[in-house]
Length: 132
Image (cartoon, rainbow, N blue to C red; front, top):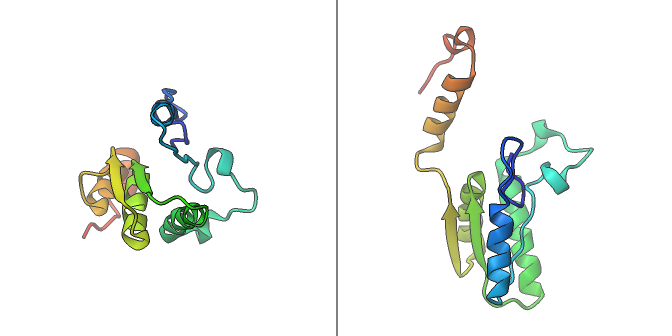
């Protein structure tokens, strides 16, 4: 899982941190955060079985609402990877000024999941799966 700086267990590159710093140098405020349950947003009482994708979208909606209440007039969402889909859904619900997809999915999610499962599951489990 990628953290708020753009790092994951296999790679440290700080790409998202550098992006935020570059925006700051140009007078543009930004907010980065770890997805619920990841990095600094780890929760000891989080039950993944009860977590829904919509919860992540609602988290972003709440952040947007907070900054609107703080007086920020222009709000843009930039979503990375899975956060791109989360950001896109939040942008549609929150009516922000713009949305940027950074390394978002280029295929339908069902195709992506099928590809990931086929490359990561043992063949003994794959033979029992039914693809629609």
